[in-house]
Amino acid sequence: MQLLREGYHERLFLLTDEREGLIVRKQTKAESSTLLAEISWLEELPPSLHCYFPRVLRSSKENTNGQAPSYDMPYFGPDWVLLSELMLTQALSHTRAITLLSQVMQIMFEAIFPTTSPQEEPHYPGKVLRLLEQSIHHITQLPVFLPILHSDTVTLNGVQLQNVLPLLHQLTSEKRATERLRPAAVRKVHGDLYPENVLVRIPSLSEATPQMMLLDPVAAIGLGRGDFAMDIAKFRSWLSAELLALRLGLFSVQEESASSPCFTLTLHTEDAQLQALRDGALLREFILLLDTAKWARAVCDADPQWRERVSFYEALYALSMVPFVPFPQSLARFLVGARHLHNFVHTAKDHQRTAQLKIQNLRQAPCSS
Image 1 (cartoon, rainbow, N blue to C red):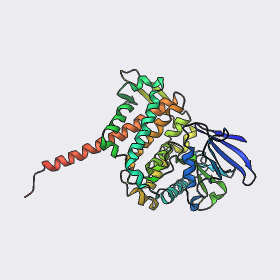
Image 2 (cartoon, one colour):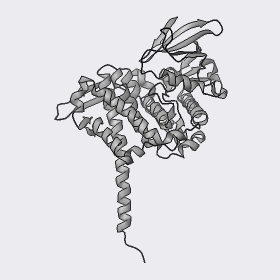
Image 3 (tube, rainbow, N blue to C red):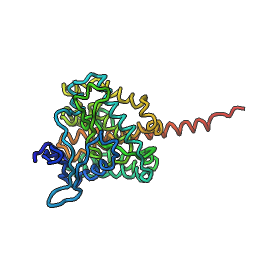
Image 4 (cartoon, rainbow, N blue to C red):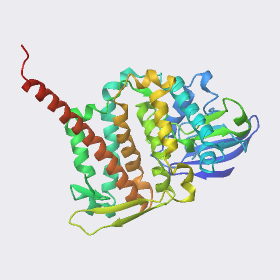
């Protein structure tokens, strides 16, 4: 058995099976692993969707004989390449890259998102707020963050933001703020959807519809039922180059002298590794797809507030990773998460203030005879 890759929560092994040949075993290495949820998510897929996701050949959902929970899947050989690699190396033309992004989203909008869970809708806002609370609680246990968290504000690139603890208090104490986290429907979602979790079969690139595999559902924050905006958020974070710059260490953080925490965060998007994303064209066309594509209409048009919630999920993804990455990447992710969370909370306040002003103006307007 050969170790292929080791992540924060799981290990991937390559081994030979008498019946299947080469297979991959994905095995937990931490109690916080979402692997059991991933196994259930994959096993409930109807046969018509098996062509888009790894097939569970066998699974072990309990610790047995000293072995951690795991599942076996087919091995995807050298014919299969990550969509992220094809995009970043510019092996694809811009038009072809957009076509593949559209294909990924079409799979989700037509085959995954239509599965809804009405019974989970009443509890959903509380569930995602608990995830945010857990992430921030873990951050409070890190000594390096204590001086930052003691302040009600943090200044990032010259803009004063509310800090994460006051923002969390507002979200949990104000019913109107909590309700903004309620999607029109709780749907089956991927939960960790971005180009690094999409495989493309190279020989099929000459076809109108290339073969794809979508990997690692529910791997990021353990939700397989939720808000489709969380899948949009992870994709947007990657296409904006923000996620990649943080992960690859292509950033710098400078602490400024001030009475409250004050930082300048610079993402080095001019680096050659981010050249394909530098001009923002892929991100803009990705967002345009969601606004115009026929396959997006049934879901997006039924939930006109989904764009506002994207910032919340970008914050949740960033803050959830802070305890798992080394300093200064943890600080950079914290600052990015604080900015997104501030944007989500204060966009709500701005909208509320605008609505109140409209009502006030209507009440004060003279009646026409």
